[in-house]
Length: 507
Ligand code: AHR
Image (tube, rainbow, N blue to C red):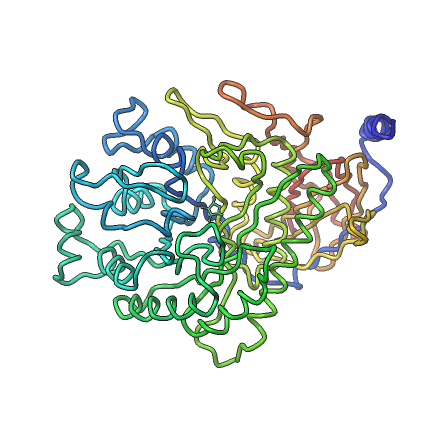
């Protein structure tokens, strides 16, 4: 009964092009938080299901090039704007021996993968991955085996990829067709090592001992590399203590601490889904940022930042071994929730990797004949255009709702500024199921020109999905609206359950 009333209300409110303003947003280009790092638009390619084989790599397919890379997928990946690619896992990395994945393909061993209960042919390995990164224009980010692996495995991997004199491993690389070092800058010191689901799970203290030794040896091979410590991903347990121990134990060694978050809407409640997830992400970032700051000194030569190196919606395909999640319109809204949080903390969140890129909880889905783009693809690509901008503090006053005794604004906002083009991007997620929210947008510094560009995702059916041959439904719409150069700003109505990016031009 209540649902019917809300639905009717939603329809009637949506009929008004302009709702009377009940919200205000103040923009001030002087209030900067930090640069939106290009590495916030990273992605993740794990040996899991059809992410690699049948995803980015399919030997013998008419859609693949001579090296076995799927050309159609490569084009979609380039359009997504992937800046950094994490590999080879994930849980997979904790049982992986990178030496199995180099040399002549027909001589590579087939191994059991205990992380995902499958067989690994090793036909795609380090060289195939690094050449792929070069082709798509992304920086590689390799996660070492911090579970069952050794310090020697880790330092030899750096030697294979980055060293340039005549050593056993460098000569192996040359024999495998690559003379110049790949210069891999980003290395993860293991994945989710606190999780009982991880091969080689460790206590925080044992992990710190291992990671310190691995970091020392890897840096003695190449002092220019940047290292990511494994943060907690076992949020039910004592996650904050794990992070504190790792941050303090590896201070001076690591450049980043990793956070992972997967969200879901099992209760079929949009406002709860977008609200609770946002509260959690804020809590993880703020707590970890506080722990980083706790013992930081101005003289530290190696400041620590947050690498949100796994994030996404993932709850329907939990028991599907291939993790082929079908994303709908409300999941596309959640992409905005994540990016808004990362942008609001742009001073400390300096890396983020969507998990994952193709087929496995991914925005791009393939079959043998082609691919389709899930609704989540579009916000990821669009937010990516804000890399390099300055994130700004936005003052927001909006109608609110209550979730678990916490009051949340319906409008979830982030703002960035491109000083070269003099463009302000106002990113607004309206998480209300039923209210279109008329908003007064006031600019504090400089004048806005009289029109603004609008990019928006909104769709009547929250559960609408795409499939092969039908992926043009839940897509963004663009338009231009009147803005105002005057001091009083202008009013814009953010429709119920929508994600909007307003591009405001400064005169
Ligand atoms: O992305 C899927 C899995 O989720 C990763 O392998 C693991 O790190 C996380 O638990």
